[in-house]
Length: 137
Ligand SMILES: [Zn+2]
Image (cartoon, rainbow, N blue to C red; front, side):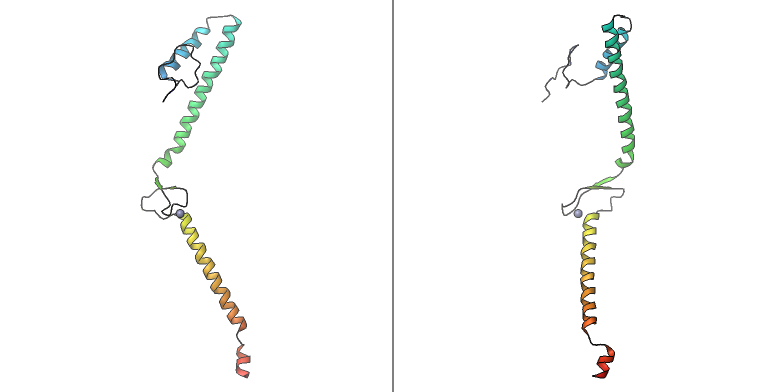
């Protein structure tokens, strides 16, 4: 529930007031009107308002650039770990559903199992009598 659902009155300092296009247009008009005034307070307010409007423009340009940076990712399809153990990821094909982190875990288990088997075989070979010893017996 918004705290201030009605359009902001002039001079409203509620920080939750959205900067609607109409409100921004009014603020830019006030900024222009301050150029006619020459007293120190008016000059200081004009400069502060000018800085603020410049910052608004800079942030808008930055936001537009961020939106542009995200465009390549909008074509990607979100995926979820079927086991629910890993964060989601994006793919450029809807046919790729395997969780890459689950696959890595599977491969690490296979590697560990094969290393264990290899160690057992090496121990067996090391403990078996050599061919010469076997032939001499
Ligand atoms: Zn996973």
